Amino acid sequence: MRKYIPDAITSMNLLCGILGVILTLKGSPAPAFILMLAAAVFDFFDGFAARMLKASSGLGKELDSLADMVSFGVLPSVMLFETMFSSSKSLVCFVPLFLAIMSAFRLAKFNIDERQHSSFIGLPTPAAAMVCGSLAYFVATHPGSLLESWCHGPVFIPVLSVILAILLVAEIPMFSMKFGTGEEGYGQKIRRIAFFCIIACIAITITVMRLNWSLAILTTFIVYILMNLVFAVFPATRENGKA
Image 1: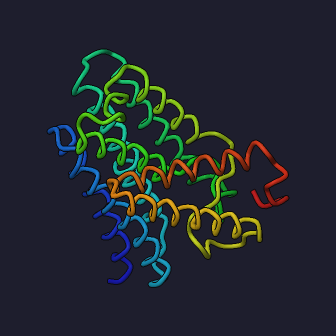
Image 2: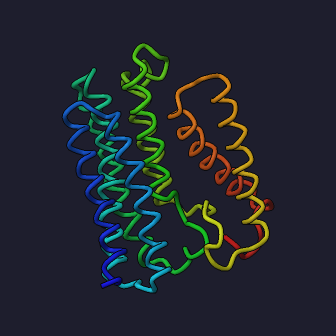
């Protein structure tokens, strides 16, 4: 019976994604982002449960990718689409849907790429999803903000969508945020520790300034992307053989 527990948790990830899409299309992106966060929690614990119960399976791996496709591929792209479409009905509003297509490629690539055990090649779909979801949440809950004016314009969201879509499938090494993900070099651990130290400082700053909590999530994943791009541009900062 225990072998079904990880799959049940994965199914909750999928359910959160489906409900999030429904809420977004009904004009409620804020609760949809909460469901995205819940999906991320389930996505973490299904793998944790599979390892603890020694119940890993090929079926579970495929189900996990399908659930991630909805929660971290379709949902974030629909959230960006709805954020633009609510103020402009032009064709450019459909550009964010390209993100869902590239998320499918990213997840399929991950399943067959033997290099991605302790780190990633390309931006993980949950990271891209958190950028989109937190942005849509902030815009929905803070009307009149600078970010809202950007997102309701014809350029910002389409450009962001294309950049994230390219990063999903780019051959760029990116460190995992999880500790104990397998064999990894000393440099990987140092970069991860440095990342969390930066994030802690950002979280404290946002709390002290009494800014919305979604900005902490948005900033976290923007920093994650920028750090990895710096390591890609300056190969000397990467540990040899530990991409």
